[in-house]
Amino acid sequence: MKNIDLNNIKTVHFIGLGGIGVSAIARMMSLEGKIVSGSDQSASMVTEELEKLGITVFIGHNSSHVPENADLVVYSIAVPPSNPEFAKAEELGVSMLSYPEVLGLISQTKKTVAVSGTHGKTTTTAMLAKIFIETGLDPTVVVGSFLKDYNSNFVAGRGEWLVAEACEYRRSFLNLSPNILVITNIEADHLDYYKDLADIQEAFAELVSKVPADGFIICDPNNENVRPVIEKTEAKIIDYTKISTADFDLKFPGDHIKKDAQMAKAVAEAVGIDSNQTVFALNSFSGTWRRFEYKGLVNNEVEVYDDYAHHPDEVKVTILAMKEKYPEKKIRAIFQPHLYSRTKSLLTEFIDSLSLADEIILVPIYAAREMDDGSVSSLDIVRGLKDKNKEVYYFDNFEAVAGHLKGNLTPDEVILVMGAGDITNLSNDLVF
Image (tube, rainbow, N blue to C red):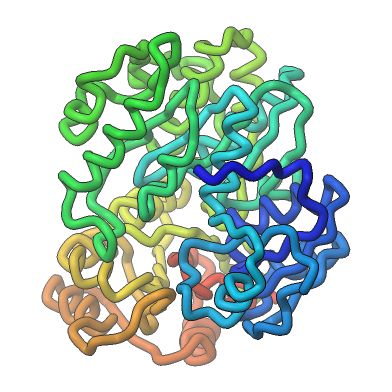
């Protein structure tokens, strides 16, 4: 960990400002009175919200964006060294930290609840934020989405706790110093970086080793993927599956949401928060941006939901939650695969999960940080779904999808838009 005192930083520039984690740190530093600027490849709701705070936002990357007097440059781990702003910062000799490194520095100054796992991190972190805030613990919160209750992905607290989402990509979460560690689950993902599930488990085991003996690990210790990760820990293990759900009256459907709430309640118990206060906070939890988010109506009659689901397990539980909420309605699922590597390695699983919907619409893979090597496309999913005799369509662009939907809808249907790319724009276009 680089030894940089963030209190001494006056001018800071962010590369990859539109990233949900990076933007949270930008918010924090802006609120601290620092001079903040940053850039991203494209404008988004995230960058627009940052501009409202007075942050200078550049769209596109150019070496001229880096202030000559910058004290620090913070960059997303998705930013390559070839990025012109990254290269400029190195040329100027400016101190540089990745987003996970900055989060790690903050973690060193606070008692830290780190929420890790393949799925459910954001919702569990957001639930914990609400519990901690409403019970007066005044936490600092960094979460991978906008909290509906606070309209932000960052909460500046004066208390002793940091509640942070802990991402496993490129072992980012190893920068954190957790007193309480939540492991929601462990599955094969990010296989563009990790070799296999065992490699992922090795990273989680290293994170577990950072939890002190007087700390807590909240997980399902009987899960076959989690069990080997926690076997050497001296911290106290709390089995969240044994946490009572009797008083839950959550606003969102799905067993996965109930599990997230159990994990949040387990953390609250470990901290000593009153159970009644915890349940009240959970039952009034309003959710986060792009997690089973209700967007509005198409043609004033068909409801549209938007979700960040981009792994087969997430797709599966999101469709099942929709079926639970609307058991009598036809579910039209629109899916944008995220990353060629993820689509290729989990192709069969994607086909199986998407087949739970009544109609499936595919659009091209969102490349993100990868190049297309021609070995996989959304059409591979389409072919697999056709083999299962599913009603499935493929469109090259969002406009064609919107045209297909708006001309064929009936009141007994519901639309579910899923993916981690820019597919959220389609959900906006459909209802506005």
